[in-house]
Each structure stands twice: as C-alpha cells, then as structure tokens.
Amino acid sequence: MKKVKKAIIPAAGYGTRFLPATKALPKEMLPIINKPTIQYIVEEAVAAGIEDIIIITGKPKRAIEDHFDKNYELEAELEQKGKLDLLEKVRQASNLANIYYVRQKEMAGLGDAILTAKSFIGDEAFAVLLGDDIVVNDGLTATKQLIEQHEKTGTSIVGVQRVADDATHRYGIIDPAGGRDRLYEVNSFVEKPAAGTAPSNLAILGRYLLTPGIFKHLEKRQVGAGGEIQLTDAIQMLNKEEKVFAYDFEGRRYDVGETDGFVKTTIDFALQSELKDDLVLYLREKLAELEK
Ligand code: UTP
Image 1: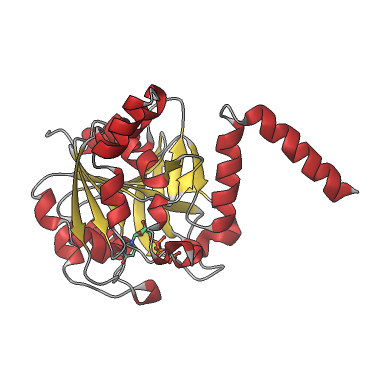
Image 2: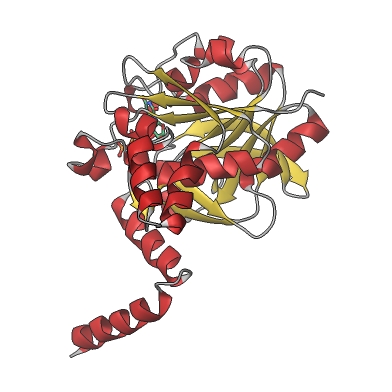
C-alpha cells in the first residue's frame, strides 16, 4: 500500500463565531499562546509523516501564506540582535513541510472546500485536518492513528470521539454498526442531526483519512445541512460502495472553533507552559475577588 503523504487543511470558512477578529484574518491564524492554531495542525500532519500539505484559503489568506513563508527581514533583525531563540521559532514555521495553497471561490461548505483540492490529491489516499480541533496526546497523533488504521483496512477512516448528548446537533454523527478495538463499522453518517435524533454520541472531530473515491460524490454537489455542501454527506454515499470505518482516536481534544473552547484551551495550554506559576497566582486572585 502506498504511504499516505498528502493532507488537506481547509481554512476558507468565514469564522463567523470569531467576528470581528476574522474579518481580515482567518480563524486558523488565531493563536493559542504564541502559535497560530494552524501551525499546531501542520505540526500534527508532519508528525504523522505527511510531506505535502494543501491549505484551502478564502479571501483573507495572506496571513497564512506569510506565516509559513520565510521572512528574511525579520530573521536578519533577530540574528543581528542575537535573539536566537526567537529566530529558531520564526524559522521553524517555514521549514515544516511543502505547503501549497488553493483558493475556494465561494464558501459553499467543507465538502466544496475539499473538492477544490482534487487535482492536487490525484489518485491516492489523503488526510484531512480541520483547525477547529487541536488534539494533544503523548503517543501517536490523531492523524497518525487514522493512517495506521487505513494501513490495516485499506479504507477511508473517520476520526470520532464521544461528545455530550446535548452537543450532538453541532457535529457529524455516526450510527455505529459494531466493532472492536475502537474501530467501528458504520451504518450511516449524519451531519448535524436535529437535537434528540442523533443515532449515537460518536462525533466526527475534524480528522479524516479518505480514499480518492470521495471526489465523485463531492462532485454531485449535493446541498445538505445549513445549505452547504457537506463532507459528511459525501462520506455517507462513499460508505455505500466502499466501506468507511470510524476510529475512536486517543487524545485530549480541544475545541478551538468557538470562543468558549478557545479561551479554555488557551488557559489549559498556558497552565502547561512556563506561564503556569504566574497564571496560577493570577487566577487565584481573580477567583478570590469573585468570591468576595
Ligand atoms: P466551520 O463551520 O467550523 O468553519 O468549518 P466556519 O464556517 O469558518 O466557522 P463559523 O461557524 O462561521 O464560525 C470547518 C472547517 O472547514 C473550513 C473552515 O475554515 C474550517 O476549518 N471551511 C468551511 C472551508 O474551508 N470552506 C467552507 O466553505 C466552509
């Protein structure tokens, strides 16, 4: 079986939940501490052995391109001032992988965004990573776990984890047909089921390993939930002709796609960094004030 080398990172959405910050900046560029979300995502792909990444961009795309490009002026300045730690951090972002860009012409949904990368992908299996979820674990990255399952089954694999029952209407949800060792056969995939109708609480959380068979279903441009062309609907069609499995991946998942999750993720990451001691003192003070 061919090694999985390519990944798509869609970053063309309007990011309405973060307006006005996302008026001129993709939400994938919002930082958790000092690193843009999309860099965590690129690093996950690279750690899984991905070599070529295509980022799907929308209108405000320059910031993403500039971030992963070289910045000679800034590097020269940091070098001259002897700020070698910072220089290393700046260089790291431009040395991660081969990164390509394609623009989604119209924000017609995640399915349409993936279709935009069809000719880049060609005839091989590929990974998809969304910037809404950062997954942290000590072992294999979420993408690597999906690649390993794909190497066993030869099929598409969708990454899932359990979410709260009252949150299922926000996700693509699977109806599992049974399975073991975290790998499920799937009866059906449903995008954003109405509250109370979800077939399970196993939600698709922004990580996919797909075979190129997905493209002919995306080309049908079927409009689904929210009036958008949904990737989940194309996966549902694919599952009828070649099996698609769901894998309950290991790792702590951080929801950074909405403001509440974004703030909590920032606090969690800060508590695991060198900011910890100061932040603990500060939070204690704040809590004491609130309790007065
Ligand atoms: P989301 O629905 O979370 O992103 O899409 P959004 O639409 O930008 O967010 P809100 O709801 O308005 O706040 C999941 C992923 O798919 C990409 C987004 O950039 C995000 O990474 N996406 C979505 C596209 O690339 N194109 C689209 O047309 C829609």
